[in-house]
Length: 133
Image (cartoon, rainbow, N blue to C red; front, side):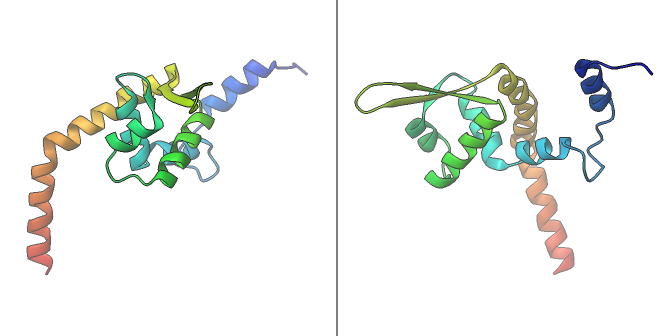
């Protein structure tokens, strides 16, 4: 019986990922990146590191609780890096990792599409509501 290395087992697992299967771990990733706060925070961090308060001002509507939860989740997933500078008060900066930068490029395309087609989507909603209502 041939033995396989850990790298070979990971490659085999990766080849079998299918987001349409219930137990596939890629669903967890898809769930994370489809969150609106994730997309907005990735965009906010795309031009360089930001402090927590800067992110809160830039991403209108996010509560402090959601901002903290989302940043922690992004850090846990390796998409954002948190840097603490000892000072009074303590300075905390957030920046995209290389993994986060790659995801940002994909999310940027969706953001650009949404901005370019919002009028068409809103018009379609109006037509649908008028015909259904």
